[in-house]
Image (cartoon, rainbow, N blue to C red; front, side):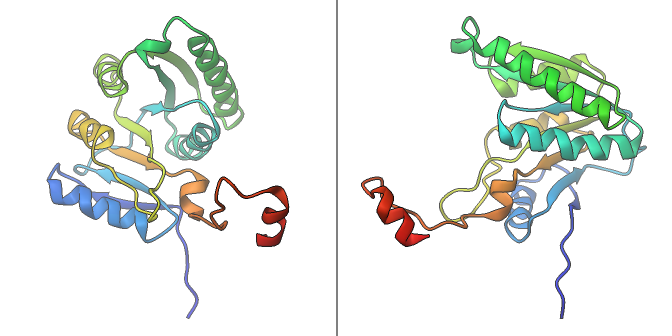
Length: 198
């Protein structure tokens, strides 16, 4: 029997706490992304894509950009800078990252804008969601723990409560889809030890 993998799994979600456990289980059993839908509704036309700077954020932009193009929607890329980094180089770095993401979306044929906010990520995402007339939210999945589990409690579950009637797409980074492919090497190991393990 051949096993077929999927890019996206869709799950009904109405805010019950046991559904978070089911969503975590769905993410644990495959390499797919997860779209949580609260009720039947029209296709989204304006999507808020929340990203952090770095490789996982790039993957969030690519996958959600393809889905956004398929839906014929527009997108806003949002990055939230923690308050303690609001006066340093982080806002400029976030802006450069978002501009690159905006160019990527435009190459995919997706009209896009960018926004940078400073503060607590859940609070700032909720504020942008309320202010921007969005009808879908995209969040990056947390990286898995040492056992390969993805924990959606905390920021994700809080934002699910905020999103209410909106669909929420949870995008997984490739590292979380692959799991831990490499053997764990103690920090005291030397380079020649690494060659022997690999």
